[in-house]
Image (tube, rainbow, N blue to C red):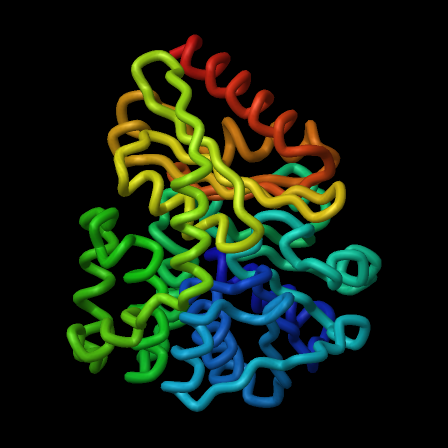
Length: 331
């Protein structure tokens, strides 16, 4: 069966009435766009379904602007224990659900994972059904295929949601392949005005984010691993933004960590050149083993990944470099 048919068969098997869609903490436009588009699709093909969408610890600032533009609200206090089926969108590890992780793990209801990241073994064990495609540019691209496979015409709002998710995860289509661009063309045919819609992904940077980027640059430590320049730094917040900034400054790989007590939060970014030549997948080769080593979880994309764990910054950086040297040495 097609993936969407596997999902609908599961809904029928458990006689589902209430579906809960959950996104990772600080949910980005791909996660939010995918969840809202899937919510709309499910309610169109199963009109009696009640569907709620929630993001652990809330959506990102950019996603909040997107939600405002579409006059859409997320559920603040999801009824996790009441859901007949829980669907995790763009969520590679259970720890990305923050305080909800334990409640989701304890549920007896089926858990479905829809994602485009490298799968995590613990998440696979937890999932009743896993619909994952690492080749897809974004989770929104997977949801687009659901519409096609169900032969459901995409509305203008649904098209905009998926367009924004794809645009965000491909860095405004810089990382898009031919399949992704064909999907984008179909979404435009469904009513998306590209320039007008893309403006929803453009907003002034907050001062706190600017400060985090500048602090990360000031605290930078550069290490050579083979022919590659790896930038290490630490900030209290906006680790992902800081890591992106360090790569844009010239690092091939940026690892930016934050620590509160003994809890670690690490974001990693890599240049396209590094991924193509070194053949290193940050999510699989670095974040996953790093998360396991520090009693947490890690995962993500080839060029963007994250880790939550327990430990200290220096040990985290040392082990990250060890993993990179080991992986590059095997290429």
